[in-house]
Length: 95
Image (tube, rainbow, N blue to C red; front, top):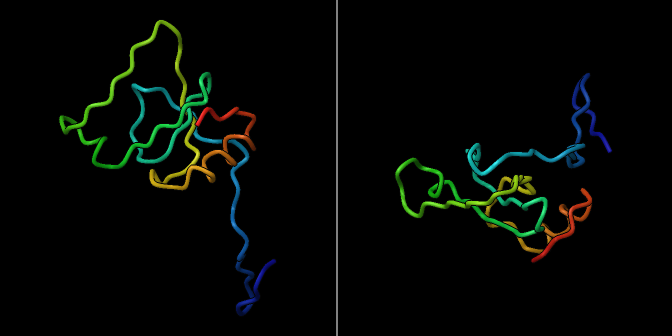
């Protein structure tokens, strides 16, 4: 639904992305809630966790490729929301 304001229309409906942002552990630089594509595990990264040299340092080592998709820019989104977004993008949640 759009709302008329003067001569322009302003959308009041939520915007949906066609695809979720995909990143690797090494390239992760934005706070948010992420789901690992292969395992379906949920990881929450607050902004404080991404400060270089700050604690806690999150590292994951694996012989396989590990990709993360951002299901929310809010690292504290509800688990139900994270599950729904993952499922909508054909990622089976494991949380």
